[in-house]
Length: 281
Ligand code: FPP
Image (spheres, protein in one colour):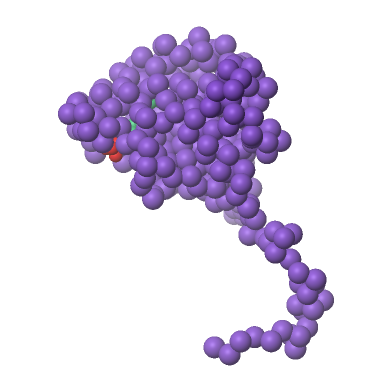
C-alpha cells in the first residue's frame, strides 16, 4: 500500500481514496470480468476490436495498481470457452492484441515483480499465442510479488471437469482408484488456481448481473462489485472505490457478525427446543 501512496500525488483524488483504505484489510485476490468493450466501440461507431484495444490501458492500470498495493493475486477474464462463438476476425484480433500486450508489458511485469500465469485450456490457442504466453510465464517465473492470472479459453465448468479428471488420473497412476474419496480440498488443489487464495472481490464492468462461468468454485464467498462503467472506461479511481466499498461490506462466510449476536443467542438456549417460540406458519 505504501508503494501506491508513494506513486500518487498527495491531495489528489486517488491519493485521498487510497489513504482511506485500511491496509490490513485489503483483498488478497481480486478477480475481474472485463465486459463492455463491444458496447464502448459501438457507442463510437468503431469496429468491436477497437473496444478491445481500448481495453488494454485499464488492464495495465489495474495490474500496476494492485501490485503497488501489495495484493497477492489478480485474475482477469480475457477469453472464455464460449467466446469462440464470436466472428473469426474478432477472435484473431484478440490474439494479436494479446501478443502486443505481452510483448509491451514484460518490462512492467518485471519492474513490478509480477508473475504471469495463463489459466484455461491453453492447448486450443493458436501456436503463436501459446509461445508468447510461455515465454512471458517463464521469464516472470522467479518474480515473487503479485501473481497475474490471465484467464484465456477459460470456463469455470471446464476447470472443474479438468480438476476431477486430474484427480482420477493421479489415482489411476497411484493404483488407488477403488478407495478414492474426493473432497473439497482435493478439488481445490487441482484447480488452475491451486495454491492461491480464493478471490475476495469480484468486479464486473458494464452492469451485467452475471457470473458468466467465471471461477465458479473459487468465488463462493467473494464480494461482488458490479459497475455500469464499460471496461475501456474503468479507471484506477473506480478500482480504489470498489476496494473501499469491499472494506465496508460485512463478510460473514455463512456465520453471523458479533453485532447481530444477542445475549439470548447462546448455544444452550438454542438447544432447548421448548425455549424457542416459533411463529405459527
Ligand atoms: C468482453 O467485452 C471482453 C472480452 C471478451 C475480451 C477482453 C479483452 C480485453 C480487455 C483486451 C485486452 C486484454 C488483455 C489481457 C491484454 P465484450 O466484447 O463482450 O463487450 P460487449 O458485451 O459490450 O459486446
